[in-house]
Length: 469
Image (cartoon, rainbow, N blue to C red; front, side, top):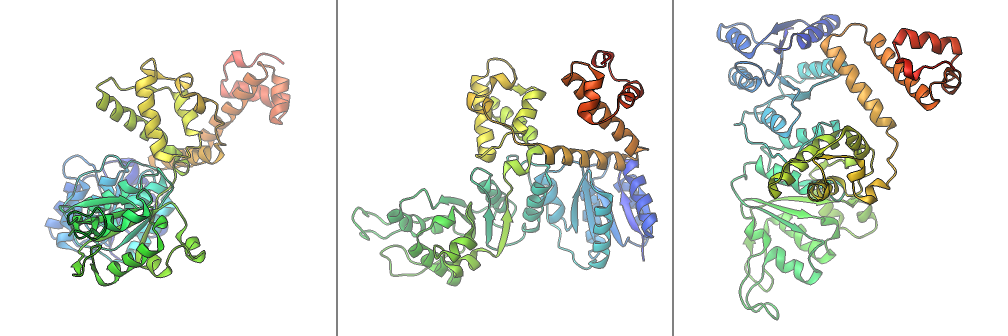
């Protein structure tokens, strides 16, 4: 087997991957820059079995290396690595023909599994496409959001119908806009309509238009949303609430590509990509007879599930900073900033309104918070009275992320380092809880008095927290 090429300017990343691949018996070759790897290709060196490359490096970028490899050796799978986990990177990587996109920090076993899959499926490649811009409103480093970014990247060259599932306020229209922006229809119209917000007797005319005199008040011909979106994308939000008779008309359009204006007799061809979204479970509505099963299957060609904000709590600080900056720009004022305490508090709240609720909160804070730094006491009273949810899964996820980062950096004795931190926090908080009384702290933690005394000395815990019990 030909070697796997590792291209990264971070020596620690190369070291970890080299050790891992060596242990797995997979041959490898490392480069500190894309320029070095491209030089090897230009000299006629045999191409790699799989290429793993960082995106952002001094000199030529990983995307330039990706383009060079796909031009010369289109069958070589390329795995793009990056610490900048954003939509732009994901879309650019997939449009350039990348096999997979791997955000840092990553689990080493996951990386090995991905490399083995790339080797097995080395013929699965896609063509290159020019890098496009970022949709800045779509932010997220959480694994669930990375899956959404991957889906948008994979669908960049597709005309397929897409169904987006997600709670209200989670950003379904932003995903639909991103799908349109990174598609071959990007230069054509993007038309959005919320089918639940329009009265039933007006929705048909909104979608398909009407002829003059079709009904009382129809004094002129009107083009509907399908005609307005010609050659572009039509986004149908809250499709689960569409009346049954309109479901039939929509199914007909999706099936044969034609429709009639209300009161019209001549068919109109519809060259439109349909993206639908709903917060409801359409399978359940089909079973209840509230949604046509054949329409569901027409819409459900490709499904993207958008996570709720409580499923991606680690993104709350990132989103909060973005929305505060956005509100500051819109209002022409200095950007407010949240204290660490306030950020932690917000990260523990159950945002039923999802990202939209967080954006509205940031706008409220920009207007109403008295100082530049926002603390818990500056939050709206309804949020201050909320009970933060348990953060058990969040601190465990944070711990997993820290372990990954330390392993990738090649830090020695990760177990010993994190164990010390863990014990120091446990004992310090217990001493704070008991007013520095060691015996009570030891009892609360379920350890002996001699043990806590020894640990206080070993861990260098502040004396003010360790008065004799």
